[in-house]
Image 1 (cartoon, helix red, strand yellow):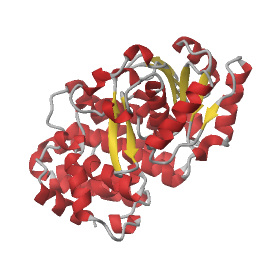
Image 2 (tube, one colour):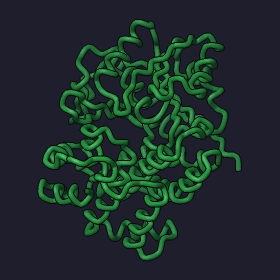
Image 3 (cartoon, one colour):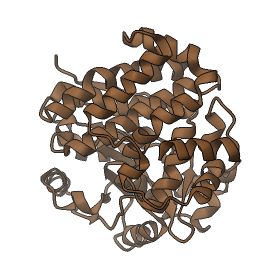
Length: 381
């Protein structure tokens, strides 16, 4: 089956193998004449990146790249990116890569025209209205992993390197004007990145589905996103050249990120401070925390997870779903505990404080307190 389509939900998405060839046209559609391609260091010299730069250069759009991006991007990366954007006279960004490249690319396009400091736009109340909307540069997003879904998001997750806290910077115009989802770009992902990013998408769907907030459109998208991960992540992990599996996982990633407008929960509330302090891979950290969080939330989600299990063809309701998650993690090489993930001297009180301050707590179906969050975190060890 050929998976190729043009979607306009939640933004313009050009989906299908080989569609990176349309990058110049995508820039034109976004009104970009002098783009800055922003990606992470690991991708900077890879063939998929140099080929994309070749396409931009051949179309007369220059060959500018900024790749000083950490795995958990921070305000220092952002400042350097803004400087590169301004000095190059750029008028838009091609955000290229996994969550780090996409998040920082979106942030540079946002911040380059602002006069207020970055942290003034944290996702608190209506702080986003402080921004000069007319000064935000257009964005073309090109994901090269299938997990974060940042290509369809209206925010960026940025680490404050001084406080070691992950902060969410939000504005509606963070949403890219055009997205190119080309599954061929994900073929070279290592197995552990395929697993970690795929399970990030799964965590987005699970948490959105369990969030108590009312958003039936997100509910439906989260449920189908879970099915796509269940059916296609094992295939993508087993054979990275399976283009159908890669394409379906790209869909699941975008669906999860769209669905979590309904809310996230304790999985992300824990993984954000853990990643900021210990620099663990975000999706893998989510996967490690998920079994414990499911049990933590059991009193409130037995019914809704039972509905999901039925749709997914999993027997035994909530317990069967939990067993499926355990088996999936094991099959994808996910560590059983945070200790096995490499965190040996966990600062429990600091992580708990960070979790309780994280916006994701508001979407958890069980109220998170200092006592029960500490017990939850220890169960992940």
